[in-house]
Image (cartoon, rainbow, N blue to C red; front, side, top):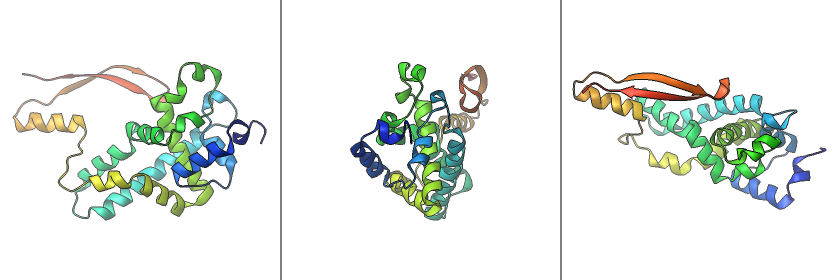
Length: 204
């Protein structure tokens, strides 16, 4: 591959990445695509990111369903969200030092794209999709279970992993107060990964 991953990275760096991922790619072209941001031009990772998003949701949902047979659907959904949301995926990418491997365009490099939350989380999803295409479902399931082993152990059917909005709503309901009113003040970012600024008003 011209301008390939091997042109930019030493074999020792690739070995480090494979070791942290607990997976060695057979097809480096898939890995390169997963690590290529759209700002770089050419074939990029957005389609494979879409695939990875679906896969990580499926694997985590299955793991929680099997591990906690007594947990209610709402509880399982909250736990899954806490493991597959943007913050969790960006944290995972940082654990793997994924930022150093991402291929970016000059503008994104100058603006610190290698450490940007949204880029890290999307790249993590793309890597998940690439492992699936390279090794199949069993391979990516095994990887995701290894990556999340300690996190899954931390869950129990009595542990609260509710999102802040749910916790606030339950607090207001317990006090027989009016529910919070949320207003979207502004939006930013591209259509597929927007960020929202929201105000919350509570009657006292």
